Length: 270
Image 1 (cartoon, one colour):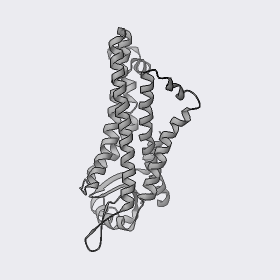
Image 2 (image 1 turned 30 degrees about the horizontal axis):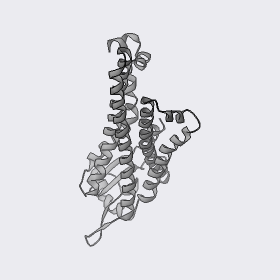
Image 3 (image 1 turned 120 degrees about the horizontal axis):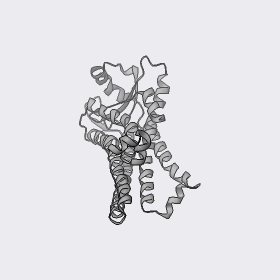
């Protein structure tokens, strides 16, 4: 909910032009000062990093629950603080790298000045942003690799990859365990296991499609100096959709939840 509220306040737009990737916040006619909006832009990036860390912890928990591991107890006592630290650390690293390594600069302003005016009709002084500019065009027409952008983007890429690997690895392990359980249990238990299985598959696909793949594509295109333009704005839409869509698989697929929400009659029809 905090992430969604921040999204409404900041209204960020992801924009890509060749090797430039920016999360832009339009500051004109906004009652919040541009300096604070820049901080909120960094906080928005922090929330995105927290989400990445949360996915990993969620799928580790699901796996431990599926196999009835003794380590599941770590979620039920004071040791849960260690699990909670994972998304917190993720968010701090992601937000800090964006805010300090990918901050606005003169080179980015010059590259962005005409692009913003032609694409959105905005003046550069009416906007603030965060993001990398890998290959900076010099006055003589040559290119200079920006070290801060490379470091910041590398950190982000590694964190996306680690989150994606955790989802895929523990998701597959859960799938294998649930498949085995479905073969060995009674029809009633089998029905519940199949619901959990389909909820797991759907909840695995949603963050991968809405978060991991769009971010990876935008970063990959920019790294190779390829232009996505306003198409990169789709990423802003998918990120905004995620908080609303993420809970739906469990709500609609698992019968107990469906019955509670919609009542017995609708649940039986489904």
